Each structure stands twice: as structure tokens, then as C-alpha cells.
Length: 75
Image (cartoon, rainbow, N blue to C red; front, side):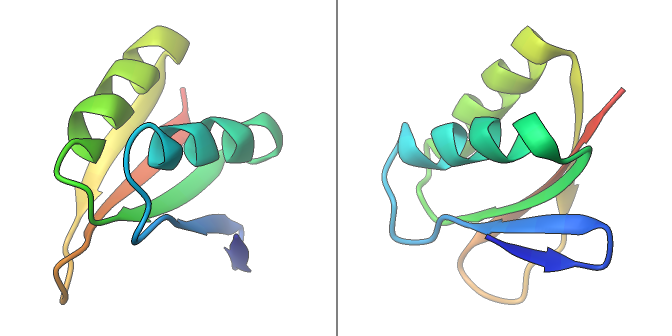
């Protein structure tokens, strides 16, 4: 995990679910704005389910590699 301005970046590339979602949940304990990077095809569903459960806003971000990116914020 790294900080990029006020956004916490969680790089979960190479991790299989449920690890990207677990890393996101841990990061959201302390941060209000997280950028999650993951390359597991299941991560999108896991992130969406976790966000619905916690009422977080999820926005997909444009990626330049094979990993997907989501900006997750508290509402």
C-alpha cells in the first residue's frame, strides 16, 4: 500500500480472490479514498459486493496494462 496524494493505493496484482477485497477492506478502515489495482478476473465482483455491503462508491478507472483499477470512496 502506498499513498498518492490523499489517495491510498492498494496494489493487489498477482493476488487471487478474496485477497484483493480483503486488502481493500483493510485499507478502507483508515482511508476515505482508495485506488485498488488487481488482475484477478473475480476481483470486480468481490469489490462490488464489498462496496454494497459497506455503502462505498466504486468507480472503474482507465488502465494501461492488464490490471483493472477501481477508485473506492466512502459516501
